[in-house]
Length: 350
Image 1 (cartoon, helix red, strand yellow):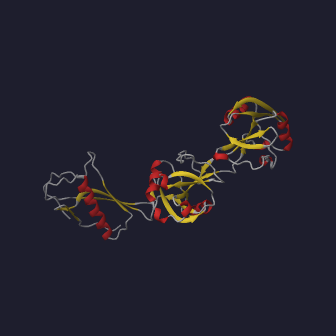
Image 2 (cartoon, rainbow, N blue to C red):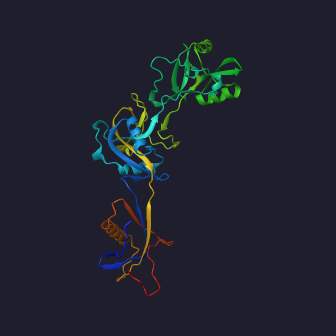
Image 3 (tube, one colour):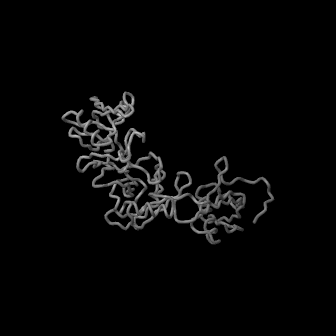
């Protein structure tokens, strides 16, 4: 950092030599915004890319697509957004964030690998055009009266198919008590082994034989819903009203900056700008103590005076070779003041 020597600031009609003021100077590199979350910075990339392309770019150049942890992060992204640089006329206000619906994460409630032969965890008997994730809310599976499967909202109240596993013997048990999926899972685990896994057509037929002529019953297949690209467990949610709605294969999340940064689900192959994040680079921090000699009764702790002086200091630092990514702040005393009066009449100036 260029050394700061003599610096004079003109405030109204008075002139000051600066000393014994704490000035905090922070220099970072690159055009970015600092996140409120644990030493991260965000990078708004205006090139048009699909979600997969954007993810690859972020992982190659930075860390990953951005994870949004709170409203402070939302506001940071809004401040970065430049509407004049958005190039897709059909999605002019949207940019990818790291949110996606994990459509391929189906797994059985009973996770014991020894229970399954190779390939049996992948057995499926879906109805045609299922799973369809209607309204982006169908993450659990039920078997219908004709023996095929459909995805349902996990909050639906349905009968359940439990099973009891004793060595090689597997017994399926139909529970005719309407429950949501998690309640059914807990009930089956408490009274049997688990919600039923279906490993092959023979077991599917055994379950079919127990079913009533109408309706559907829970089985043990479910999947994750929306996840963050970097694997973060952030639970913060900022969906736009009515979203996500999966209105046509919409499995990727974008922030809409004309709607206060709220999220929407859109098709993953749309090409729009995106936001990456990376660790905050090591900062060069300098603390200067400066003395101010005032020739007037001007209140140096007045906010307007302090702001004016900061502008002069920033300009002086730029003149000495520092770029615009410099942050200069006053370091306030415990009483909230920046300046305090010296009792010693002999003052060294520089």
